[in-house]
Length: 300
Image (cartoon, rainbow, N blue to C red; front, top):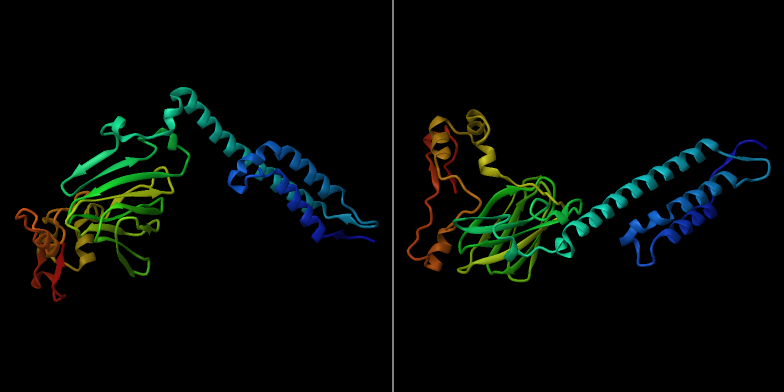
């Protein structure tokens, strides 16, 4: 009889058992442990693929060769990735000792700390903390003054997981790809997620300073502020985006551009909190004439 035979359920089961035997007993979370047994796994699987036969029939050699090739490729990637990561850990440990794997703001000084009127942020990313290189994780710690806002921005390379250390009337929001707003008010102990690539913001509508931390699934999530990025485009493109003529565009562009934080971002909050007589900034107003027939627009 000619032809070839497909893999049977017994083959699949045996493959699964062989793979499971190579995974460390404490679970798949330490899959890099498989690298120690990868050569033995390849030999066993190649033997299974090439030697399993039925009298009078042969194994499909092309399929067997392809399977073995894919297995070797996957094992090579795993070995390279895990080996590189472990070499990085070893090098950091030898060079800087155990303290390379902790981050103490009190000892780091202003490393990664930025502040302006309205709040502060302290980055814990690969640039500030070398131990995070190739770890695909980072953090930023924030404080946000009463009635202040962290204006609209985007992280191009990471999701963000926010945790409120201390705060009340803390507003978090983002806009979906379908332009649907997702806005919630949270407080101490609550968390919120900001999906990668979506415009989002945070705002403290309480009368006390809020503190929070955001963890990212990237050592360098990237941050692009919407306002300055928008006005980096040609004037005509920005004006057309907002449907403004020259007068309206000039009024909008000459307004106070948001920085990393916007103090006194909400007039009702400023009045309620009686912020030492401070007045909330008056929103830049674009007249109806400058909108060329469009409705009145207020820009905060």
